[in-house]
Amino acid sequence: MTHRTIRYETDSLTNLTGLVSLTALTSSPDPQAAYDALRARWGAVAPVEIEAGVPGWLVMGHQESCHVMRSEAAFAKDPRTWRWNYEDLLPPGTAIATFAPADPRPSSFHHDGEERRRLRKPLDDALEALDERTVRDSITALCVSIIDRMGPSGTTDLVRAFCQPMGFLAMTTLLGFDLETGAQLMTDSAKVVVGDGDEVAAAQARVAGTILQHIQQRRQDGGQDLISFLAIHQNFAHDGEIASTAVVPMHAAAIFLTAWITQTLHLRLSDRQLASRVNGGRVGLDDALDEVLWRQSPIAQSPALRFARNDVELGGRIIAKGDALVLSIAAANGDPAVHTSDPWDEVGNRAHLSWGTGPHSCPAPRQARLIARIAVDQLLRHMDVQLHVPEEGLPWAHSPWVRHPERMPVTYRRATAYGDVNA
Image (cartoon, rainbow, N blue to C red; front, top):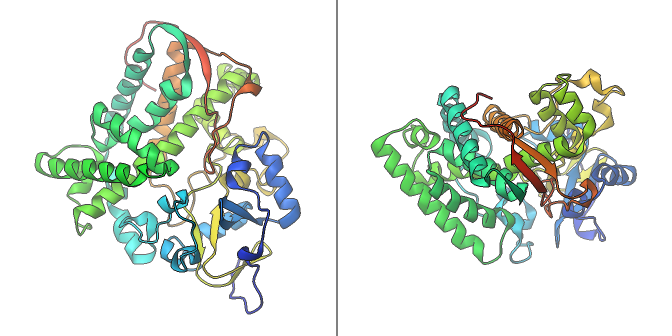
């Protein structure tokens, strides 16, 4: 695919009304039908409302999404290139400002080119330095602890009792925080991610203060966690860059890992065909995890927006300089152009875009997969869990970014006595 500068009139987002919202798409009873309706009207790229009063372009095609992700020269991550920032068009209190602030934070998430490379390398190096056996053991122990807190039997909301703490505390464990500190970070991160009004600034300040204190302690005492490796990396100019870098995987875990674990358990408990294929050994747990990413992507839309550096044509639409583009991972993964009619042909296929591609791809797919695999394996191996309400009665998370049940009432009982089990 090529891109080119356009010298004729662009499609103006400011003139469009009645746009569907990202949250309505994500929480729809049938998201793929909603994406298909958008495709039928607009093609692979459609205008949407990111949130009230904030329009953008939703990129739904697999090919178009890959092009945007790989073309840093044409589509920037730096939110200072967003017209809604530099022309002060954002309504007050918008949640998207958390992910695309007018004053970007000093992490690779908000930068391009050489600055992105300088800030990304420490995170890549730190993740590479983690010992996988140690990670597996610590995550398994965390999982056992969370399961033990549930007790031998009862009823609970599996999302809040297991999926959320497992997804978030697994990442704070890798960062080197104890469970009590991790729990406080989880509370504050939730406020930041959802844009909880007046609470955001205070929550961000608490998170930053906790991380900065941890950086200083780890630099002095040393360790084998992510913060310890980041704290001594020569690429960082100051501790603010280290803290901003550490926040990215932490917030990502708050939304992505929780969603992946929740959606996998939801499908495992509600989809008899998937359950029989896993139980019968026809597909492994890793294949089941990938099938969730392909078919029921927990990341519906990526909060990592891109911004057109110039007027450009994409998917038959003319995108104006400074417009925001939202990458729909669920729509791209469901693009008929990348699927066959036989799902068995696709077992083991990992060409989905849940990790992204190009210079801003996810830095931790291996660690994320390990955490999700351990979480699902440990729970189902050691607990007999049954949905407490009909599958069709489950409410979906009210989010523009992730798709998973908001609540998952279950009954459960301990299946066997257990200790540490290798995943």
